[in-house]
Length: 181
Image (cartoon, rainbow, N blue to C red; front, side):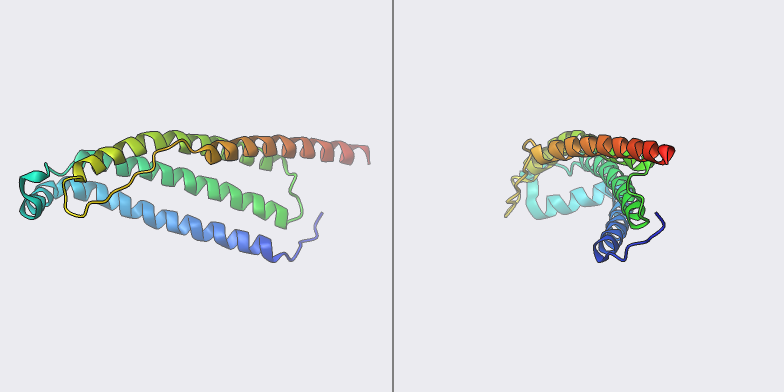
């Protein structure tokens, strides 16, 4: 299977996964910079908030914000790995060998990453709700947090686990077929 298909969809998928990983890196770098800045400049932030809103708003929740950003950074890291595995799968499809045994492992890992991301969203939503509650007294602070259960993420994980088994079975069938020829 050395024929390399000239498929625009595969090229687009590869480019898109690379672009998403670049965006995730930029977002991660911004968060890595933001966390210490919140902590270092907490007094200046509090002074500005007191100046703008008086006693209606308490002190800036820098530690809560830092914890939120740290969890989001973890989510970004999981996303980076997820799209790296997806790009590797796309590459094997482009090489004409989609049922490579490592693709089953990649899909399985992508399923676990999806579940881990769903688990991370729970404390992220909780911290975001705390920050939204803190910001309520501010003028024009119309903050909405959607912290509901995400069935799509769970379904994606299940689909990835099933696909991992399909790819594992396909790889085993291909190996059996090559062994008999």
